[in-house]
Image (cartoon, rainbow, N blue to C red):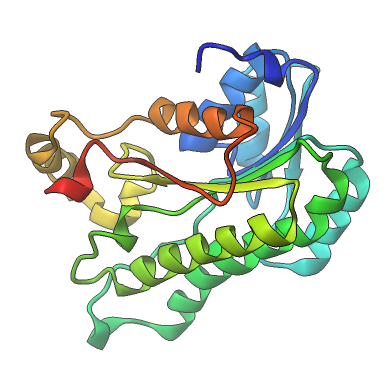
Length: 246
């Protein structure tokens, strides 16, 4: 996004801001003059990220589990004013299994992290946002190109996009959107492919029209667009290198 002026002097909550796509967004938001709160479950990880970014005064950390209503309510009750809320969080560890091996509790964790978490962020975050504010979630290509072993992730991503459309109506004029990433080289692939990560991503790169898999900055670009474009709401922005075409 060329014009980053909208980030200047804004306050952004980035859930999942300690790694991958969320961290890429955090870096560019800070560089553009925003005040950023990064939230996640691992306090030590958040501390390391803050140190890596040289502990800027505009960066704050909050260790919370967004699937727990009291924790979400507590954090947002203390934050005060916000301009934008972004969540890239997803707990998919163990979710990619064929049905005979699928553990229901694992499936429930996926639902909690990608449906209940965003729902709670909207419930307690919307009152803090101005009319021009925004909420942005991340769904994913699995909703459109599901695979064997991926039933839970496909279903949850599709459900999240339905939630986005409903919230865009209910919370208007606050804007609510989603980015749907394709295959992006982030740490989450450790849970998906294990030690076959590089080979798996390489094979997909050869298939995609753009000739590569995504990078965290590709998704941060898309989120930045949705934050800055005040005429976009209830939309799913696909950033997947042409994956839906193959």
